[in-house]
Amino acid sequence: MKLTENEKGLLVETEDVLDLKNTFDCGQCFRWDEDGNGRWSGIVRGRYVAISPAGGGFFIEGADRQSFEEIWKDYLDLDNDYREIKKELAVSSELLIPALESMDGIRILRQEPWEALCSFIISQNNNIPRIKGIISRLCEGFGADTGRGYSFPSADALASLSVEELAPLRAGFRARYILDAARKVSAGVIRLEDMYEMPIDDCRRELMKITGVGVKVAECTLLYGFHRLEAFPVDVWMKKALEADFSGLTPEKLGRYAGVAQQYIFHYTRLTAQS
Image 1 (cartoon, rainbow, N blue to C red):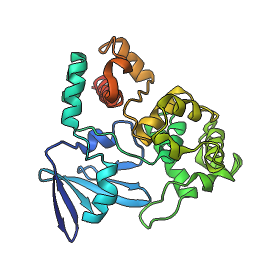
Image 2: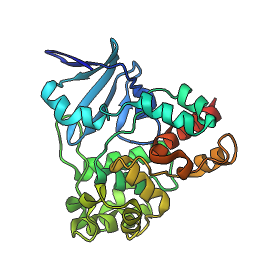
Image 3: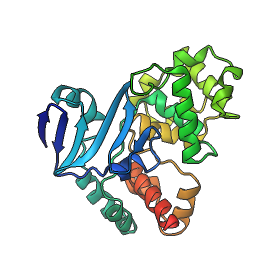
Image 4: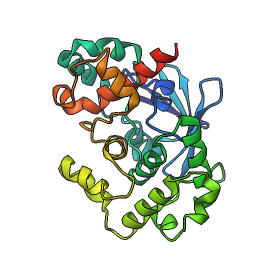
């Protein structure tokens, strides 16, 4: 990996592909927007960032080597070699090869656990534009102003609110679920910080103590919020894919990178259906 710093930011060149569109638009996150020219901007860990394809990699505006080491390398999961992960997945099943090849460059982001939990509670029975709208209103209403957007509000910031105070979000039945999650996390009933190391079945059980959190939301939280790459969310798209082009694939067969395979299958199936 080669880093080149200038007054505008940091150029990151790497042999392992990061496709910004495939990564930011594959359904794993909801706070990134593209400007039409390949430049993606969002709020990550309380700070604004913009990333564009450049040279043999990508350019992070306003970043330097220190912030790269402290934030961006981890968030973009650049220490993981996805070339090797994809080789291992291809060996586990040849059915995966079309998705692995056509969706090249997807990486599983290391998002903040609370943001992932809350975002996927909001995602239930919802479409991506509406999910993004609810999250945007949640951040504007209760997050901190960064000067270029709003941070994701903490569980503590939401725990004392009422369903009526969340009415402007237009989140519907999900408002009650958001508040139950915030209160349990804020009170320490659900200890998110422990879930990086806990057995994954214990994590699932803990998360599902939250009202409105079922198997799918728990799996999404574990995969996208805790980087538990063995987690395997299944929604309507995945059910269709597993019954058709990827029949017979299971998390057990896919092994330690089942969650990475899931993301490639999910995005491949969604884009194939739209084409």
